Length: 160
Image (tube, rainbow, N blue to C red):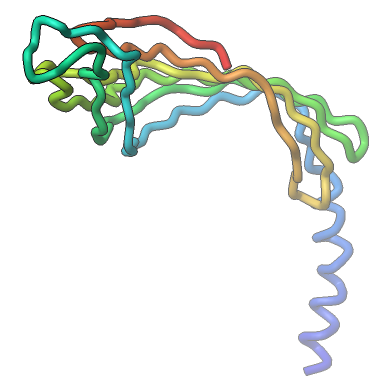
């Protein structure tokens, strides 16, 4: 029992020396892939449809609720700078997506959405603890989403 304790005590300084040599400075790259699912609702402004006798005046005729599903694949690039126990970094990622869904809306027309790509550009601020990095990140997210229905087709990229 004493021999095991002596070996553990002898290894303790060696283990802490390794933890102190970890550096988070440098570039990194990565790939990602996954599957996305969710719900979507599409609401159009009221549209006057006086030509349809069963719908008097202005009605909302192109509303729909549907599920969206599909796969994503992309990559990540980043760089971190470490000074003592503080890490500052930048990161960007981009993914191609095939996430879409649709339903029959209103007068038998089809409405839906299709997300073709998305990405982020972020900053990072972190604290090093041993060989671990605890960090906060924040920045910009963007996506290319197409939405369609008979009365109001839309397509474009949104920066949020």
